[in-house]
Image (tube, rainbow, N blue to C red):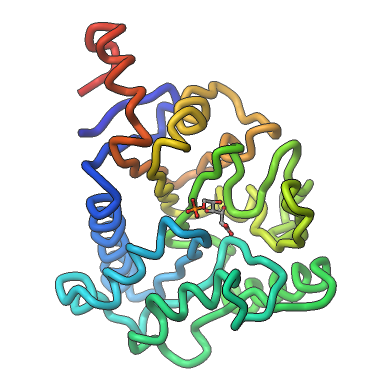
Length: 262
Ligand code: 6PG
């Protein structure tokens, strides 16, 4: 069910469960890859960290319907954010995506760009900004697809409330700190994320329902809720949610007698 929501450019797709969200995300991943190949370009994807996207990554690596529909040598991988830990650390977003997807598919050498693990997050951010500039060459840094998750506190990537790193304009990568535990992070800035052709949020689980409802109802970007800062400059944005994360839609539909578009 496609549901129109206050953010007019955003679309909320409510799917039965986590498996259905993963399948739809994989389908859209394949579509983005196919568009790039048809255009004769690389498909540059910024992967999300966290647990939610792992099911999608595993599906892309193992389900022939998706895996065999992707021209992997045309894919180039980046990360939306990273924890400042070694790449073989269980918390590494690079490590998680490598295990779930990248080690299983024929991606070209040199087309997987992990955020470097540097002792100083600001140095890692600077180095990654240089990596982006080098990888995109004369093209603007504009991802074909950005995958993002949502935290119950309204964070996305490693843009945490109360205010994400200043990063505007040409600052594409910033150091960050997770307030809950003070852990160091490196994250793409809203400017880098919003330049993307397509942004796909994957949100599952009842614990995210209230925040998902707030973010989608937001009329204006609010630095206290960083996910509301994610509004594509020219591209498209879609939210894939399972029924538990979107349970409020049914309530609103009942309350407003169909005020939410079918
Ligand atoms: C990270 C992610 C982060 C994640 C959300 C949701 O590094 O953890 O970038 O923004 O997407 O916290 O995480 P889950 O998918 O694990 O719920």
